[in-house]
Image (tube, rainbow, N blue to C red; front, side):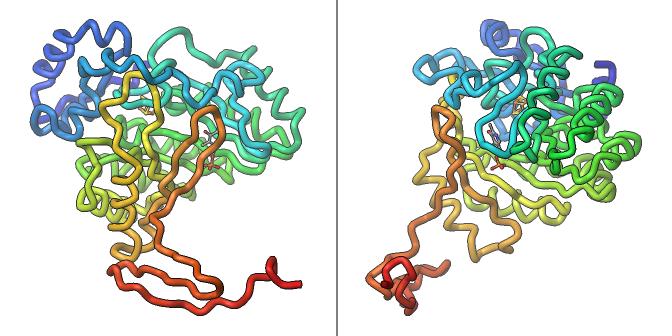
Length: 347
Ligand SMILES: *Cc1c(COP(=O)(O)O)cnc(C)c1O
Ligand code: SF4
């Protein structure tokens, strides 16, 4: 991957970060460590929000109770590299490489290890499976980071998908605008826009990740007509506060990035130290709705163990007493709302 070459213009001493990771080689042997000069350059001090996301931590090895694949992705994989959980959409794992190995990654079991998951034969089998299932109309490229592939490989995958008439939507999940923004080139955007309707969900977790470089990457993508969404993972000590979350979400909106999901941490082995309680997550959500633009408010989702799917959870703010609803407003006021009798109760 020769595009991981970067002009080191950062203020932080990267050698220090590398020396630190060497001291934790017992962790990196199990869970690979990688970061770009760019992303390392966003670290302002040890243990800040950027550091926590990319630096190895001894606690990763202490978490032995959680499971490597709690969402049962392997069991939901009819052919290698494909996860088919919902009837109408599938996830295609096209890469197991990323510019930065996020310590909280839900695919910690896969990223940075083993051979590339996608080769010609694996791709052919996955495309054949999708072709044979007309119910599939939405294909999500994920991994690892799909944009770690070179333009040629990416183009081959997208061309294969576009040859299947019932695939209406293609989505790409990528953290590259955050971790390696220079990979988003005009050339890449010209390639991607040949495959519309194509959506990208990126992955910003903290306001410090909003920089002139990540902004430029998002601008190129949006200007290519690619709707940009964002998936944030709720991370203890990184973004688990109303203030940080507001700054992040409104900052994204200003980049024309629509916050899509706020993910409760999956119960993935090696990541327990990042977990917050759902109750705390709901409190944060309560601090968003009504307080900031509705466009900036994501769905807070729990991806249920065992592959049961994503479920959006909401702070309980409606109490139903017959046809009278008592509703709590964003300021905490209780307001009654007179409903009519639901159709389901009428004869
Ligand atoms: C998240 C996910 C999807 C996409 O879900 P949306 O709610 O449509 O974004 C599809 N398949 C799997 C296996 C997923 O984990
Ligand atoms: S970029 Fe995404 S897939 Fe890659 S390590 Fe980070 S969270 Fe995992």
